[in-house]
Image (cartoon, rainbow, N blue to C red; front, side, top):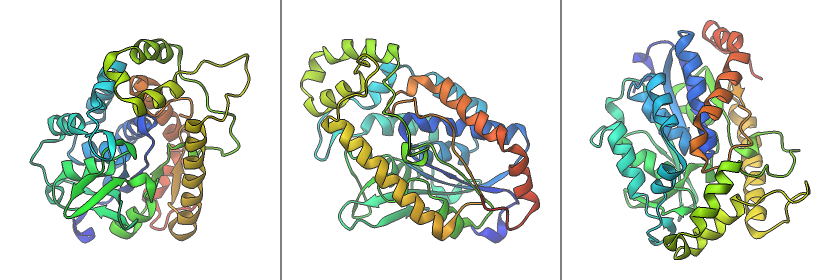
Length: 319
């Protein structure tokens, strides 16, 4: 969509982070309630997914209802292992979920507000900005969590999760749609990096997890079983958990994310960055939607005066 034809409003940049990204919905709620218009949205991974629902005109309350309807069983059904090449799950269940909510035939050029999703080319390592064509294809490509979901073949490229190259695409928002840019970061690397060890999963998640790990189909998917096992560990006498392979990999990804964001902030910092407190929510804990949404609301309400000010100042205030 051409910038000259767009109405006034904010440009959003919504970051990746799995279930933590449900906090984006709380931010959208506050913007809607405050009458703050959004003229474009860019997103990475779950940020692309929620941004797509916004871009088709779905009211925030419908988004809330959709997010809070996900329990742990429905969540795992989306990632049901079928062991395709390059991932534990092919993502066909996610495509089905997206198609039912977004419309299978919808194209980006026909959206009422500007939209772009970020993915990464697995072969070249380049950032790929998807701003035209099938909306479902763009979101599915951006959601391709390495090792969890198979890479997505699109236009001759093999695409993976946009978080690999751009965890919070505020620079893409700026170059594609101008400003002012309001970014929302929910990934662990965006939070206080001097954080304590990873908070163990909730009691419910651990209880259900033990049951899940005993299921025959899980035993046939060893990579998924090992990943889930790491999410269900109970705290041991209040001590830090051991540096197992899964925890090392997660921490390395946090470090990489933090470094990527620092570099991109130096080039194209957003006018305002919101960082909801969602570090206690695990990447697949989508059943904790109410908690994540509340965190997003709290972050937006705390800076609401500043958000209003962005609309009155062409250049905004860098923070």
